[in-house]
Amino acid sequence: MGPAAMDRIAVRRVIVFGLGGVGSWCAEALVRTGFGHLTLVDSDTICVTNVNRQAQATALNVGAAKAEELRKRLLEINPHAEIAAIRASFDESTCSQFDFTQFDYVVDAIDSLQNKVLLIEQCVRAKVKCYSSMGAAARLDPSQIRTGTLDQTRTCPLARMVRKGLRQRHVPLDAVTCVYSLETPIPPVGASHCGSNACLCAPPSDGEREFPDWCAQKARINGAVMHLTAMFGLTLAGLIVRDNLSMGK
Image 1 (tube, rainbow, N blue to C red):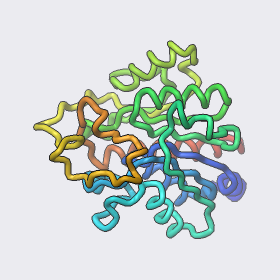
Image 2: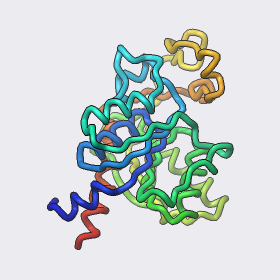
Image 3: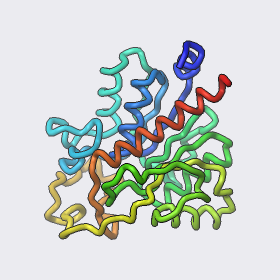
């Protein structure tokens, strides 16, 4: 890519919201490519069911905070990077804590529809480049992954709901580039125990009850595989890399 591009990449500031199967791999790809300033935001802890697809999740750190565990992993890759871990959810009560003008890029890998729409709106209002992930769960075919502005998305149910939410807030749909799939989501086979009394996740401790229980809030738990979620995350990172390359042309 050349020294000028690498110099630009080294000083770019990126904040990643959501450190699951998409956001964790996006963050790792950015650090491995030379980005030296990352802020990682996620309120969740690692569950044994995350081990199949999340970069920081192993059998040895179940129950630890996702943001801090990913920070440790990324610093092992580049000890000289500046990486901040924030254990928080992004929602109406916390959004004022984030000054988007301090960042060059925002990565949206949030699962919650309401908070995803809010994040995109805040980025557009702040005129900060935002790259957003649409639905990566319940899919198996990486060849159907596409990129485009939100008004160009099709097939993805999550993208359809995000478009609706942004229209209600009068946010232009061509202001945000996203990663989405043309593959029709695959219905889950069998019942999921996530969010139920039979869930494999450890119950939250007293100090963790302030954080949302995302699984319990979902109407349905869709399965997800690493090769699909990671491809979404790597594609998001690729969009940011290519944007930096275009600045030198």
